[in-house]
Image (tube, rainbow, N blue to C red):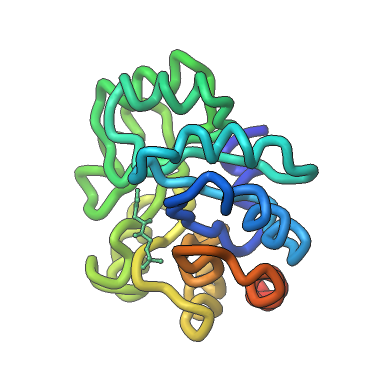
Length: 203
Ligand SMILES: O=C(O)C(=O)C[C@H](O)[C@H](O)COP(=O)(O)O
């Protein structure tokens, strides 16, 4: 799959922080059952890589690693079986390594220089991060205007109440957010319900 295909799979990519690997599979199963198949597990906790391995066993799930900030983390994420890689920003060494590995890669951008660095590498899909703090939808609209070939996954400060506004903007293929997968032991019925609501958002 290309990163564009992954972004088009569902309107929302849950951004997941796993503190206990025992939570990983029930959470992934509930999200997939609700219609969200693309899951980003952040490398922010000691058990994140183990959680990625566990979630890969869930039928229908497409598991990626988030918070990948350098080549060593990229390698660890790939070794754990990550199917795509998300980064909060874009450095040239990380971008080159991701391209060399041929893994779908979604790096964060927050200004025109970031996007131009990505274009130089041949990348056209980006995470707009931190979406709300970096100026919200007006900022992305202004930023996207000179870069018509680019598509975005805004993440950071987006909730069920604001996701639709972002998704109505053509270059936005999906949004990322932690609201669908709150931290801690998952209430699987609630997660599935929230996921279903998110999966039905119109793009
Ligand atoms: O960990 C990373 O690599 C990140 O890029 C940060 C996350 O994407 C945001 O923290 C999610 O934002 P919220 O939905 O506002 O919680």
